[in-house]
Length: 355
Ligand code: PA5
Image (cartoon, rainbow, N blue to C red):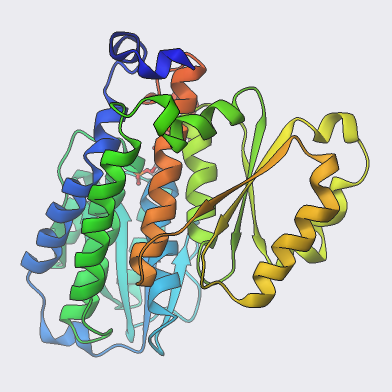
C-alpha cells in the first residue's frame, strides 16, 4: 500500500500518466460542456421521437449514462447500440449520436452506415478517423474531441456534449444546474482522492487495497447506478488488468444471489462493492441489506460506495469517478501500467484486413 503514497514509484509504473488524466477529469468535463455548447445544430435535429447512441466500450458507456439520465425525465427512449446491426425501430425520426473515439471501430461504423441509409438524424462524436470523414462527407454535425487520450479516459468528452446538445435542442430540460453541481462535486472529489492524499485519508486508495488479489464484483441499482457499476467493471478490467464482474439490483436478487451458495472456498476470493445512494428506492435499500446478511459469509468482503450530490447527473458521475480512481490505484498495486490495453489492440489488429 505504501507505494500509493510514493510519487516516484507511481511515475515509474504509470508511464503514460493515467492517474493524472483521472485527476484532471473535472477539467475535461468543463471543456466537454463547451464542446456541446459550441457545435452547430440545425433545426431539423429537433424533429425526432427517439434517441440512439452507437458506440462500443469506452465510447459506448456514455450512451448508458445518457439513457439513465434522459429516460428518467423525458418521454424519449434512448437505444444504446453496441453491435453490428441497427435495431429496426431506428429511422428518420431518431436522433442518433455515432460515438467512436478513434473513429475506426468497425461495429460503430457498421451501424452508422445503416443509420445513414435509414435517413436518421446524425451527430458524430469522434477524435478523427473514418467516422469524422464520413460525417463531414454527409454534412453531419460533428463534435470533434481532442486526440491523445485512451477512449475510456475521454469519457467526459464522449458523454457530456450529448447531454448539452439534447438540452439545447429542447429535447430534455435545461441541464445547467445539474452540470454546474456535477462539475463542482467532481473537482472536490478529485482533491479528495488524488495521489497527494495519503492512504490513511484516501478511501479510493484504501478500497484498491481491499480489492488487491481478489475478483471485484460491482453491484449497482436499476435506473441509477447501473451504468456506473458497468463503468467500474470495465475500468477494473482495462486499467487494473483484473477480471471484474457487475450486476444490478433488484434483478440479481432473482438469480445471481443463488450463485453465492456453493464453492465457498472459491467465492471467498470475490470482493463485492455495492454502489449506494441515500435516496435509493427503499425496497432496494432493504434488498441490499438482506442480500448482505445472506451472502456475507460466502464472499471475501462487502464494501459500499456512496453517490454524492443532488442531481442524478452529479450522483452518477460522483460514484463512477470514485471507481476510476480505485481502478488506477489497483493497477499501481498490481505493478501494472494502467494505460495500455494490449489485448484490445491485438484483437483489432488481427481483425483488420481479415474480412
Ligand atoms: O477502452 C477501450 O479502449 C475500448 O473499449 C474502446 O473504447 C473500444 O474498443 C471502441 O473504440 P473507440 O472508442 O475508438 O470507438
